Length: 220
Image (cartoon, rainbow, N blue to C red; front, side, top):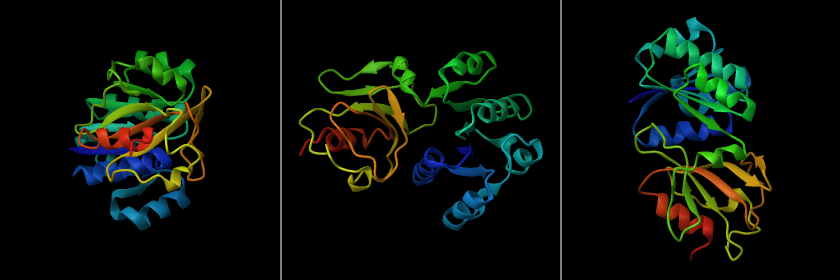
């Protein structure tokens, strides 16, 4: 599967690593020249420096043959415009966009974005399935084969309470996307300390889901 990622901040970076590890072909489009250079140093020629809303940039990145188009920049406007161009200009069937402002979510849906992922606490409203007896929730089902979006509540007796994210060893194809603290969405920076009742939103694979549950709930 060929997947185009627009934006390579924390979410885009880890998403790219997971998709590559899962065997997908990807291209990353990053506007910021400094960040683009850093990504080039790690990923090589799959990184394109440019504006994800520029038709010529998207054309050079092979958008017309993309199976999925994922916009994860820090700008709702950029994510929406890029997704619309991918859908209307290049005919991409599966467009996915991150929205930060909950007020924009309905607009994204109205304008044809196939999957809208809200990076604030409103994402919890999209819960589709609960695993009985476990503080693990499946969120809006990923349209990328082999990846799942889940939320795990950290119980009071978890052994990871007080640990920084950088000290928590995760499975190779999984990563933390957001940590919810008292209705606040915190980016997954290395020094962020985990506390009881935090909700950890993560991307994982079906094979690693149980391992993620054990690690993040502190099961030994």
